[in-house]
Image (cartoon, rainbow, N blue to C red; front, side, top):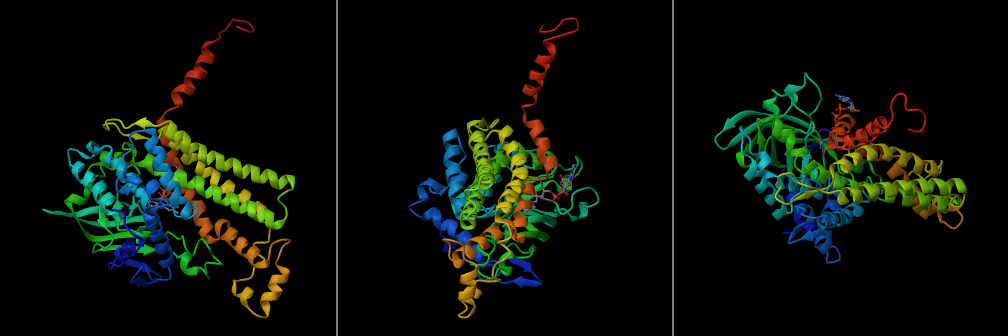
Length: 478
Ligand SMILES: Cc1cc2nc3c(=O)[nH]c(=O)nc-3n(C[C@H](O)[C@H](O)[C@H](O)COP(=O)(O)OP(=O)(O)OC[C@H]3O[C@@H](n4cnc5c(N)ncnc54)[C@H](O)[C@@H]3O)c2cc1C
C-alpha cells in the first residue's frame, strides 16, 4: 500500500505520549510545535501517490527504499527516489520515512545474521521489513545511549522482565529525530558494547503509542517561528529530536530482532547493508542540501549586485565544487557496489566510499556554511523583525523604500534574506551543522570504520613497492 498524507496524519492521532515545555501534547498534527512539519511529512506520502512521481518513488506497490537492490541500476533507481523526497524539504528533513525503510531493506538482505545462540530473530526481521513496506510506515530509530562511557549502564534500555509472550523493557535512548512523527521506533545500540553487556544487547521495534513509551521533545523551532515568511524552513521542516524513555514497556517476542547478544546487536547495523543504505539516502539528501545552499548564495549575490566580482564568482565556484563532491560520492558508492556477503544476490553501496562520505560530509558542511555566510554580509541583520512591517500601511512604504536593492523590491529581498538566515545562521541552522557532523555517529566511530573498510592494503603495497625498489649501495637512479 502507498499511503496518502491524510492516512498518515490520522494515524498520528493515537494518544502517543509526547512532552514539550512541561505539557503533554495531545495531538502532534494540530499542536503549533509540530503541525507544519507533520504536514510536510504527509506531503511526502502524497508525492508518492502523485502520478508525476509515483514511478520514481515506488516499485511493485511499495516505496522504492524497501526494495532489496540486486544491481547497480536498482541502486540508481533508489537514489532517484531519495532525491525526490530530499528536494521536497530542500535537504532539511533528514530522517524521512525512506531512511529507516532503507535500514529495514538492509536487514532483510541478510536475515541469517539475526539467528544466534541466544535468540532467533531471522523471521522477525523479515516480518518487520514486510510490515513497514506493506503498510508504508514511518519508522524512526533510537540507537544512541544517553551518555556514553562507563557508569551510565543503569540508564540504558534493558529487559526488566521476561514473559511467555515477550519482554518488558525500561531505560532511555537519546536524540530520536523524527520520533514524535513516527508510527514505530526501532530501539537498539550502534556503539560497541562491552562483551559482558548482554543485558543491554537487544534491539526491537515498537509502535510509538505503546503504553510506557515517552518522547521528551527538545525546543521546537517550529513553535518559535513567527510565520513561514519569516522562518520559511524552521516553521515547516523541524523534524524534532526527542529523548525516548521506556518505563516498563511491553514488547512482544515477534517485535524483538536481537536479544542478549552483543555481537548481533552491533553487527545488524555494520554487517548487513543497513548502515550503507542509510548513507546512500543521507548522501543523496546532503548533495541536495548543498545544491540548495549554493543556489541561495547565488541568489543573494545577485540581489546584492556582487555576483560579477571575481572574488564572489570564485566563492560561488568553491560552493559548486562542494556540490560536485557531494554528488560524486553518491555516484561512486553506487558504481563501487559490493555483493552482500551471504546475501543471496543482494548488492550494497561500496563500503570504502560510503564511510569516506561520512568523513567528507561532516567536514564539508561547516565549510560550505561559512562560505555561503561570507557572501551574505550584514544584510541579513538589517531586516524587519517580521513581515508585518511590510504590511503596515504607514511603515510598509518606508521599509519598501529603504530595503529594496537595484532591481529587487524590498519584499523579495527581505524574503530571500530571511530564508538565507534560517538556512545558515538560525538555531535551526546550527542544529543542522551538528546534524551533518554527528547523525551517523561520532568521528571516532566512522574514522575507525574507514580504517577497517579497506584501501589500506593498496596504500601500503604502493609505499612498500617504492621502498623495495632501491637499497644501500645502488647509487643514484637505480
Ligand atoms: C542533530 C542530531 C540528530 C541525531 N539523530 C539521531 C537519531 O535519530 N537516532 C539516534 O540514535 N541518534 C541520533 N543522533 C545521535 C548521534 O548518533 C550521536 O550524537 C553520535 O553517535 C555521537 O554520540 P554522542 O552524542 O553520545 O557523543 P560522544 O560519543 O560523547 O562524542 C562526543 C565527542 O567526543 C568524542 N569521543 C567520544 N568518545 C570517544 C572515544 N572513545 N575516542 C575518541 N573520541 C571520542 C567524539 O568523537 C565526539 O567528538 C543525532 C545526533 C545529532 C547531533
